[in-house]
Length: 413
Ligand SMILES: [Zn+2]
Ligand SMILES: [Zn+2]
Image (cartoon, rainbow, N blue to C red; front, side, top):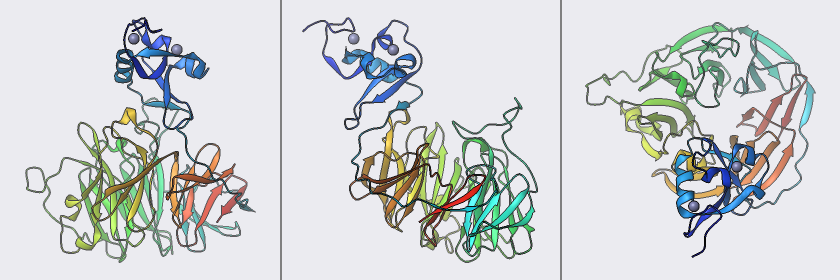
């Protein structure tokens, strides 16, 4: 056996790394630099990651193992290889509109147009770009970058408002993602109909759990570990039950973003439990009428270490695409894993998709800094890239994606 460039007489490891990561005191942060061949990568320190692959040398298996273990960030540069069948996509349509949403979660589809939350309040936007002011925003619970005491969300997420609209367009919910409060608004007269409060337990870790459900109801968290369903018209809680500490159904968990399947059969709950482990689970809404503990009886979908708040989208009523491949959070690679109801077994995975994600007619649509990408889950190929279009809302009823640029409303179907 010969001496490897890392200085050890040993078997070569399965990845290459820069020399700085085999030093006695290696830098604390390193990056997986994808080579563009399959999911192969080299591991580079921060300065070398700015240069590229030429910094990578062959090192022994022991040096690889040590550096992989020391990675506490899970940072990536570049992307794994994926097949490309890019077709030319039509350019988005554009009309003048100067509405500026508070953030990327403050634009939502509604029949006949869109609803935005701006610094002034809720604004309805018609397809021709004309606007109609609904009401002022009642409270403000958001991240202030100038205030050192301002609460932050987990990872790259910031505490701030998010918007949901009922399928018939009658009601909207303004919630605080990674925060505590929310409101349900009747859009017909702008009145406040329900105040939402999920109490104070580690809210900074999850999107606000809220979803409009079939039958003029909605579901939200009334505590970190309790989801309740309410009647929209009366405000009555339809799921009164005992899940208190010490009771048979007590759960030590944190509910997160709720995503309804197209027919309304399944509700995905993107939560977590200590130490921490992501717990993506599916609540069967057909049983929630009889089983008051249906929210406690969710089916496990995926439970990666230390990872939740992952983009996900229902491809149809049975198959859901969930981003990132793998189980250990710092070993995951960009891509999606497909799970099929009702058992939610894994039925596929492919590399590539990253960023906010929606599904339309069996294709996944993702948004990166570059623009919108379209993916065919049948073979994992990218089938389109629309540069410069970064939609923040999707209308499931019409298949239209929308982006507000500050000057224009861009729409694409
Ligand atoms: Zn280096
Ligand atoms: Zn070595």
